[in-house]
Image (cartoon, rainbow, N blue to C red; front, top):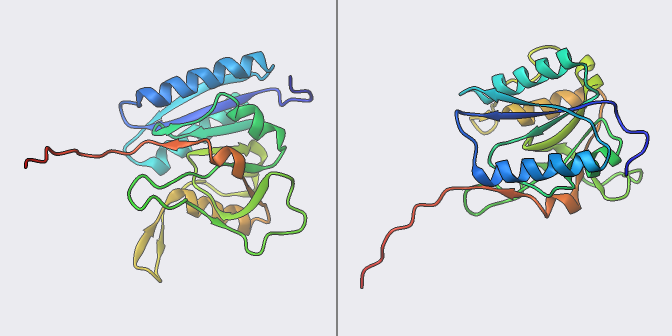
Length: 203
């Protein structure tokens, strides 16, 4: 059982009108286990929007109004172990999460690590330049260092592409002098649910 735990943790789930069954089962298992670990999950916020940045910002606003200590973002196309929340909380970092494979081939790991790694990296953690937001725990005080909207899209002029709200958030967090960490063991236990169309092969 954890000691010296935060008083309240909220979970925000950006999604459309539906969530995937495997995600729902992972979430139920994690919340059940968290209760047995003495963690107070204040609430699960369903942030439905066709604009993912807006959904994330709505989740932060709900967490602020609830006056929780931490906000855990979980995307509705993820699977994760029951121990996810206590393991992330145990690191006691401002921003800590796990990375995972991209949903489409060749399925590279998302995010970018700091290279070389700092000598002061805590055990089990890798410092990140950018990390995806599908499984990310954020101490609420982090948002005091940022201006609204906390999540926003950007433009990567060098590659003529849109920069996602998760990587933009990471850039702004680091610009504020804060650090981002990845639990590389937990990362190996996450699943990113994709979609594949199978066709009948004749002959």
